[in-house]
Amino acid sequence: MDQPNELLTILNLEQLELDMYRGHTPDPDRGRIYGGQVVAQALAAAYRTIEGRHCHSLHSYFIRPGDPKVPILLQVERVRDGGSFAVRRVVAIQHGKQIFNLAASFQTPEEGFEHQIDMPAAPPPEDLLNEEELRAQAGLDPASRKIWPVELKPCDPQPHGVATTLPPQDMCWFRARAPLGDDVPTHQCALAYGTDMTLLDVSLRPHAVLWSDGRLQVASLDHALWFHKPTDFSQWHLYVQDSPSGSGGRGFNRGSIFNREGVLVASAAQEALIRYR
Image 1 (cartoon, rainbow, N blue to C red):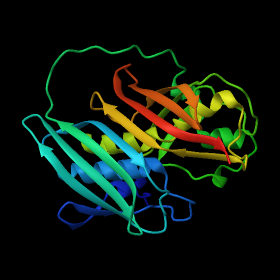
Image 2: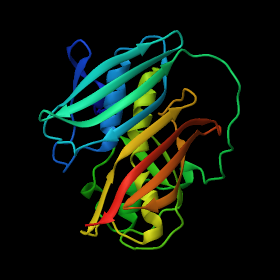
Image 3: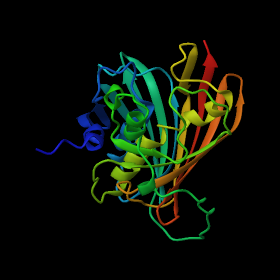
C-alpha cells in the first residue's frame, strides 16, 4: 500500500469560512512546528484566493513558536487585485495569538528581460549520500531523526558530532520525496517548505558550534522568497547558501536555488536568532 504524500497532506488545507483555513502538523510530537511548514501552508492559503497568477515574492515573520499539537488557523486578507499584480496578507493563529504572518505578491505570467547568475560547480546528487545514509555511515540510528518529506544531500557533509570552524558558505541538493503533479502553486509551496531546512545552519558554520549543545538557542526570525521561474520540485535542485553577516545575536543568510539545467528558479533570504542562552 502506498504511503500518503506528506507534503501534499500538509498543503491540503481545510476551508472553514471565506478566506479562512485550517492546517495541521503531521508530527505532533515535535517540540515546535518547523518554520518551513507554516510558510508553505500560509502560501497555500493565499493561493486559495488567487486565479491565473503565480507568486513572485513573499516576505514573512515568525512571531511565536508554533504548537504542533493543535491546528493552525490561517486568515487571508485580500489586500489588492490589480491589472497584473495581486497582494495577499496571511496571519497564522494558535491559542488566540499570531504565531506568523506573511505578505505575498502574485503576478500574471508575462515575458520580459532575461538574465541570471551562473550556477556554481557541484558534485551531482547521484554521487552523494542523503542525510539518513550519512547518519547510518556515522553509526547513528537514522530513525532517531525525523524523515523529512524533502530529501537532502549535502555537497560537503561534515562529520556528525564534530565542531569545526568553516566558511559561511554551503551547498546541498534537495527535492520533494514524492511526485507533486503539474500544479505550479503546489511546487512553489513545496519549495518554500524546503528552503527553511538548512538556511539557518550557514550562519553557524564559522562559529564551531554543535546543535546538540544545550546552550545554543536558534530560531528563524523571518523568511523571504522570490520565485523567478516555474519548476518541478520533484526533481533535484541545488541550494547555494551563504551568510554575509552575523551580529547582535542574529545571522543573516541567503540562498540561490537552481534546477539541474542550471536555471535560477528561486532566491531566499533569512535572518535567524543564533546565540548562547
